[in-house]
Image (cartoon, rainbow, N blue to C red):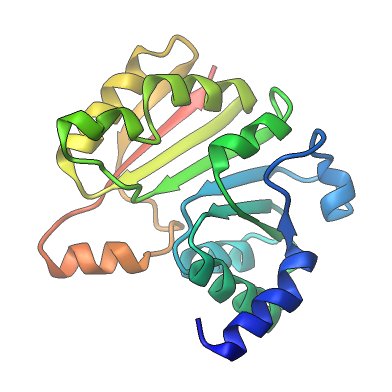
Length: 203
């Protein structure tokens, strides 16, 4: 990061970032209100996340990523756009899940996750059966798990895992107009790939 961006990160992270570990999260204490809460895992540089936050001010969002420059970029956008319904996690979302109570979330969004294409690495995928089970436990009834990918094999594998879960219903849907285009998605479009959206609802 540039010196200016590093200074911005140091100034804004204590204001807008949540701790990866700690006591159970109290959304009212964080946001000062009661509203649907959505966790966005893997936010990149925050373009689509901040666009979504601005477009839906009645929803509170937590964006998670381990990438420091991406978090810094998102912090800058939060300040510039004057967003109050967005907080960030600079860390591992799977560790952070331990701070979330069962049924707390209205939604979980995972847009263009690392597909880990090599067979020996596929256990690292964010949409593994074990992780999906954890996601379902913190979704409220009717809450949605939304995964977008432009890797067909990854979509097929995620579809199979979610279809097999007894508390999920849904599948592949047409690309929602309300989902902002991400930087990664634009690169995929240039390369000739097509995004696949899967949306499942907790029953």
